[in-house]
Image 1 (cartoon, helix red, strand yellow):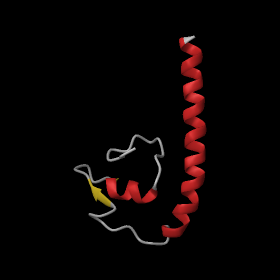
Image 2 (cartoon, rainbow, N blue to C red; image 1 turned 90 degrees about the vertical axis):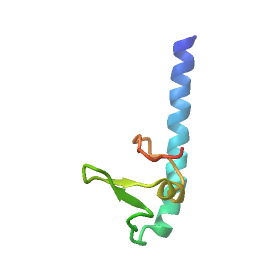
Image 3 (cartoon, rainbow, N blue to C red; image 1 turned 120 degrees about the vertical axis):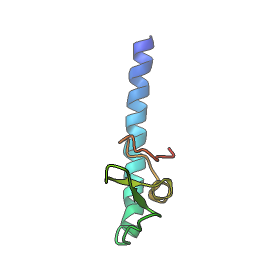
Amino acid sequence: MGANFLKEGIIWRTMENFYNKKKAKQNDQSHSSTPLKEGEDFIYNEKGLMVFTKEYHLKRGYCCDSKCQNCPY
């Protein structure tokens, strides 16, 4: 039963992400042409990599399941 529950949970989470991404893709199109602002939408970490801020993730409106450092979801 535990394995079935886990499998159902994974399937549910996958479908939830699919619908959230589909819905968010429509939202992304409305602000995708807006340039990102350093300090507001992203920062550079100590390795020089661009890291999205919590505020950017909230504007985007969904979790991409990439384990982002500042993801509020």
